Amino acid sequence: MPPTLQDRPGASVFSEIGIIEHLMRHAVSAHLPAGMTYAHFEILQGFARMGDGQTPAELAAMMMMSKAAITNALQKMQALGLVIVLADVKDRRKKRVRFTKAGSEAYLQIVKDMKSKMEALREGFTENEFRQALPFLKSLRTFLEEISGPAEPEAAFPR
Image (tube, rainbow, N blue to C red; front, side, top):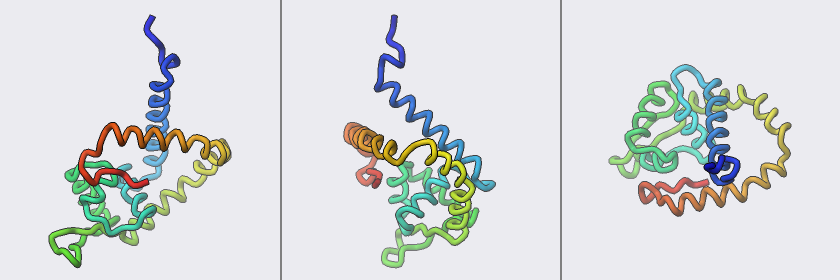
């Protein structure tokens, strides 16, 4: 009889991670304003965490997206008023992406709308449980980055 998923803990870990990621996307997507996608939310979240001003190429690497995909996402986000793409003041050949006030407000509204779900998550698990999970998850990510190699030289995701 072939081994079941329960017999292969490595496969079970990746299955659980995939399901968690899917459920998180679904939870966030339910709170997105019309026209915004989960990829747009991730870009806004990156700006909220690390600040704005990156080039599209830097964003593509950070988000692990192709340059074509990030360009498409940024065009749609600019049409929604969430970001603005400007010429770099030092090197006019480059572009820089800035978070607009509307983009910041949209991100904060999504976070506010999800507050009850985040509170339920915090009530369901202790901080210590999250802390205990982190070393393994970080080691797993680092290992996968090392064996996969970045798609482009600058593609390592800063976490």
